[in-house]
Image 1 (cartoon, rainbow, N blue to C red):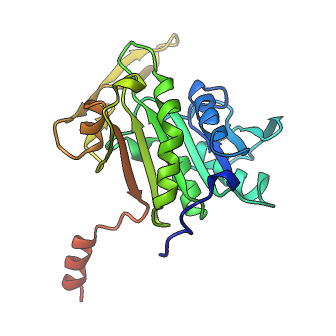
Image 2 (cartoon, helix red, strand yellow):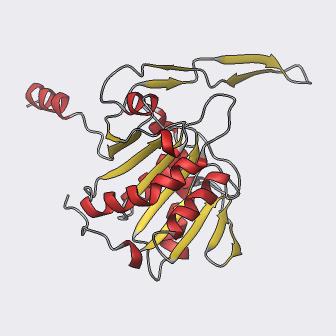
Length: 262
């Protein structure tokens, strides 16, 4: 599949913002400030409520509602995927966006997080609908404040640089900012997807009616020591930039299967 036309002139771009933390999330407000530094034509279409962990899910069994909050700012009672789909095919159908930015997520989207993340899913939907897309997430210390200023300080220049060099049509860009202030960031690293599994902890209990429930916790199993990974980068206080391919075919195994079933 051929690339988009690069470099992109961001000063003339129509930028669509979405997220999975909801329309009132502080990370979305940070992203709006980043986008405002890039273009005057910025639109926000985000979920009414938090959709963390929604993945690349669509709402198919009920109608969706779009609520216009103000000019260029809308809320959708659905998933991040719903938001981007409705933004591109309905709200902005007369002139589609030239760039989708999703985030800034409260917490990193590293390793296997990308398969669960609604933030990454919004960028996936933009990609499959033919719009270059970037997901942005902000790590933060456990129990500590979220350093939103890091993404705001580094985001505009990083997005400009990415839109100068470009990336293929079948890929999105996943950015993770480390959990430190801007002056403590050691640089930007192109990184591969690491290994991190969420949900190893399950809490059980009973509700007031005596029925059992199971609550998936946030305990993670991860290895930040593997050089070159997104986990390694953010643990070293660097910004991790990872290209994520939409085509998930395992080509070496495909070759073996083709030989077997020839």
